[in-house]
Image 1: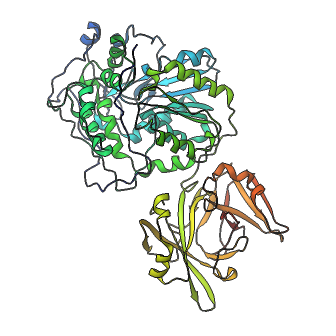
Image 2 (image 1 turned 180 degrees about the vertical axis):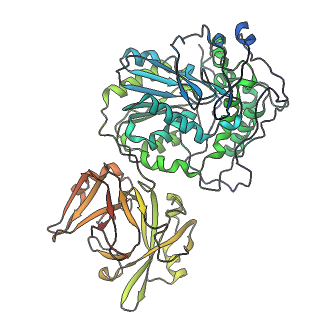
Image 3 (image 1 turned 90 degrees about the horizontal axis):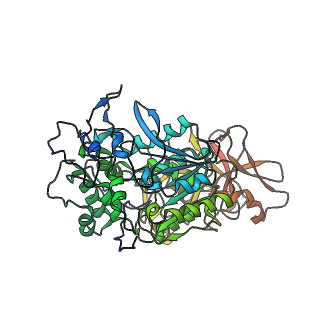
Length: 600
């Protein structure tokens, strides 16, 4: 097979992107593709068998009223390289297909595909891993491959596919999972891994991402799903002519997938691969979709991006503390999900990436087709040369959340009291925006004694309980510092430190909430020379921009503690609540800026 020129594609928005305001409707799609849809039922191109094309389409309906059809078995006869036994699970009355190869007692490798591919994409990788003794499971997303195909495009929403994948893992009772994800498999799989981190031993991403879009700023909208005869018939023409602008170009892909008279899965895979597929392989990608009635999923999947906002944030935060082995591989010709910037973002974010051989292959977006055997051998080496630590307890909504604060001290009678302004709940404190703040201007604007930057910081706690906002007043006050929005969190008495934040000097903080730590969470404690214990509530990147959650267990080696003080860490055998006494918490920082609250 010959290498050909690949047009790089950016399939998804970057994580933490600043998106433009969007007034378009992003509500659920309510179009139904059924026998009444006023479009011609065109057969898929390529030599699908007559038995496949002529098989009767028999709609069924689940107990919840979801109408679906099932691709005839004849469509999957004699697919090159794909002779795996079919396995099925019933999920909400729909049949989900999966490949299950290798010894049933082997370590699990779970493979998730994207759009418009199916488990056929993993045909080159499955045998290598299975023969090495791993139990290799590759599922077909609902509506794709051999899985049932709901007729209503509205069924295909991001939250539905996340829930189906979680249900699949729960039904098979999978644990110690080695996850491999690509394309939409990464948007779904990384979300699941972040929400169920205790189930995952290792994670491999290949051309993947999990976008977070600030609430109300998603620039993508749901298409009409009406057939548009003016759309180019072949995917190659579409990709060659679409906009190079990230947002505009992906919206065009959303619209094209939804409205082209026949979205040919094989043509898309061929266009975004670096090798020339055989005609039989292209046909195999088309096999699940004999006509347009079977294509609701592959037509709707791109539009699912319009439904993503902040629901992925907790998973991102948990993965930012994921200490088990993590590897990101990329295809050089995938200029979006495979870009060096995207690869570096994930390698920098996940602690378990340290010391791992993250590679860039001469491959396109569908890296499993281009270098499947080499990629499988690389993954096999990763599995055999790395060792998972204890499972990571899935984080709560605050766990590892990035935030920033600005303290504005003022004289109040004989005290120095600081207003504490912070980003939790209102902003994400992007580093470039934080670096751009002129703190001298902040002092002049608000008449404070000084302005103390306190961030970026990351919560160690799992939840904040007992107060909707950490503030003294019922109505939250909002201010903009540079381009960052902050709300008034609380006040802090800095009198003991003469208006500064001195290390190991506790100050009074007005606080009505309780910090809650989950059972199984590692906590970090300072014990002073009188036996008082302070538990870390957040760690800081003020002094060390590379500090991560996984580094904290050995933090004591870096601290110069006052005489008689000690640092320690332990795993909680029971949940822990940190509650202030009569609305006052005593908080101190170490010399790196990590903050701790007194156990009262």
